[in-house]
Length: 243
Image (cartoon, rainbow, N blue to C red; front, side, top):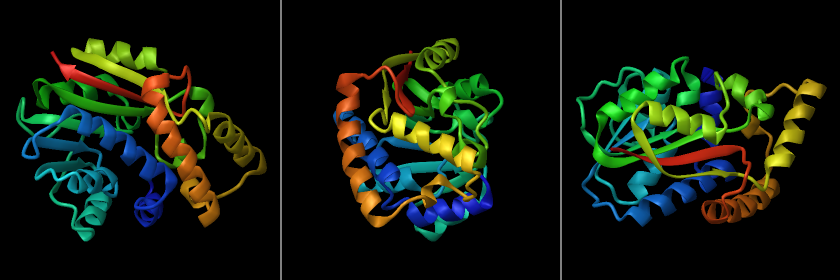
């Protein structure tokens, strides 16, 4: 991301409806697996630490982060969110089969060779252990946030599942989420483009009352999406294992 985007993210990630709702979704999934609190966890692409915050709140004690941006690592250090190493998802600085759980949330869309990124995630994951992966979905939603985040692509789930199979990762569950706000977000992104609205991040387009309203909608969304499995959504999630 742009340096300015990191500054925006670090200011909002604790309370913004999207970050908070996404942490709720991940928390529900991780709790369901019933992991021991001393398993080894890797958060790939920490950004300014949203997942690290979640894992600490869940009581996990052996969590490592990795990010290719020194700026992101500095923000995580300033928040006291634990060890974050400098590294690239396509060449992770860890030995084979080290981790019991890997979170790679909104990461592989940033790299040219997403298949190599998935192969690296496979390599550092222990056999039969778990990868939690999310990506931005549907190319027609391409907008300002994709540009400032330096995304290379948005995905459909069938395309993502094909890449996972090629990387020898076995999908166990998959669904779109953020489906309730799909149409409003599509319309807003079209208006931003048409009206040439200039902001450093879509996260800045918010107010207290709007944040509360969207938080309630998104909370309902992430609690229902795994069961409803809607045919569309702003994001896609896959739980996979190294078979």
